[in-house]
Image (cartoon, rainbow, N blue to C red):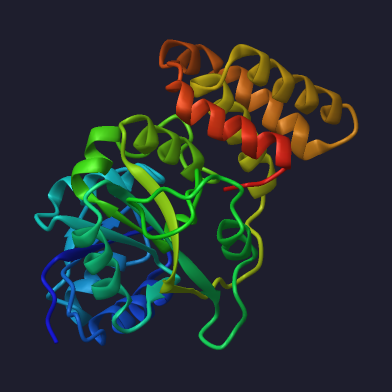
Length: 290
């Protein structure tokens, strides 16, 4: 089986071994998807290794570490109608990309599909998959699964047009909890975002949680509020961060980095359409993540 509808975009930075393993997995898929690797300024011989072991893969080298927005470069370079995303430690199960493309074909408003994500080849499901499956948002008749306003970046398939319409990942967030803002912006463009359990990605992280990740995630959650949510929500999240900063080093770092980025966030601030903001409020009220 060869399915030309979907390109896989992978971002990487100094993780040559993990990337080569991922590329082996992607090359073995029956769909034989084209693959684009965006190398975020690796210094470990990543580009040379990919050229030696996977000459069929397109490698883009922006010359600096773009973080999550490196994916934007890959999407712009792709020529297929759909784009799937992998990290350098994740890949797709057989026929999941074809299933995702079939769903995109059958549901023209579907802008982004959040897949079910397995942790490790033989592991359980990522907790976010359960959360998305039980989204409190109303089902839409023209979407194939529960509506959501979040996803895992390494387990998503996007309609290229919808992704580019939304502007892709915002550079102010860099990396870590960057998905919610993109989900907001895709939904704000009138596209649907939903969870589909029969499209499956595999995430096989190594080395435990990266240092500083919690601080970055809290920073980006607050920045997302300043970028798109009502001022009352942004102030609420910032006050909570400031209160925690009195005793939590991660919160102190998050607050410091939030304040340094706040002028840019205010320049890029725009309100969500009422329907999207209403969905975000419902998720706030129920303590849900999707």
